[in-house]
Length: 283
Image (cartoon, rainbow, N blue to C red):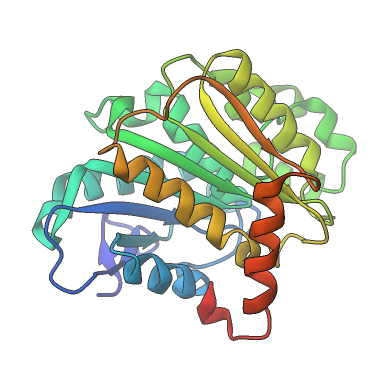
């Protein structure tokens, strides 16, 4: 099902992928990347297909883009898409009590912002507790602040967040971390030259210090794009774990850091190596 409106603007639309005869199925809302100014949900059809095959009702959402709009409009649109999923998901066989957010690059920044900053979902009449888990892949700008004005990302940030770099920190998810946040899975390729892995590490540390159940996977050899394929087994394992607990928080606070020497990371890399020769449909 394509281009279902969740708001009046043409970009406020989502595509819905449904398992066969879903009944109270968990639901994932996926937000695309593109530097807050480009991208489209169609690029992530492979992710929608794979998640659906695993039994998840999956929504891929577009949102309004810069320079036509600036922060906080992008996040407000994502919150509106969350509200649509929460309220209309049951019509498509989804369980609104098991709603997970997932995003790539700037999309990861947006899902983290919506999950952590209470103002976005409150504006839609929802509590932050409706989000049961968050997955960020190659996240950009988790720790956004004025120092980014000297980075390679600056040309993307001015149209999205305005010319006053001293105000950019207001849009940083790390500023809104709180101890009651849902579990997070953060994945980043160590060969990423578009969004620094250090931002993801800093964000994971902040979540850890707040006592939020957090998993951090730093994948050697993966760049900003290839990490989407490499992330698949980690994403599915994380979602299965949360779904097994019927949407409850993961057991115990702290960060489970998957490093190049860790057993878990080795398994993920082995799994992905076998899919790399296949089509993008392998997710």
